[in-house]
Amino acid sequence: MRALFEASARAREVFLQENADTLERAIDLIADALAAGRKLLLFGNGGSAADAQHLAAEFVGRFQRERRPLPAIALTTDTSALTAIANDYGYDEVFARQVRALGAAGDVALAISTSGRSPSVLRAIDVCRELGIKTIGLTGGDGGTLAGLVDLCLRVSASTHAARIQETHILIGHVLCELVDRRLFGES
Image (tube, rainbow, N blue to C red; front, side):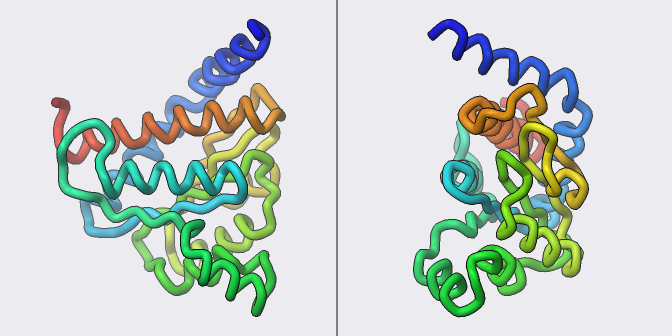
């Protein structure tokens, strides 16, 4: 049991050592886009889909304090769209097609993939680049293909275990929420 806690703590410590500057740039990118009336699109598969939904809810609802809702859309929630797109175009298109419908230049996409190799996530990033949407990748291990495609890559390099990577991802997500809130609404 102790080893699992220590591995999780280590993944977080190494992440911060390696990514503090990139995390600051991601905070700025999201805050600037939201301040300009743009939106945040989030997507991923499996546990990363749940993380996308969780973080979108924190932006749209609130994180820790009362404030206006912020435009964030998890592309993982509309089962009718997901199943229609997967059925008609193949699963690799489930996020790309939604990005094309909902995204616009100046928006920011947060792509979440523990391996960085999910075809549906990579395809969506291709469409984001085509449309002028800034991209942030949240990944782990060696970052996979995703690391080389996004504008900013937040990589949990200290682990290749999905659980340790996802534990760090949700902390990163909460840090993004809190510090974007501070940037947009002040310190209190």
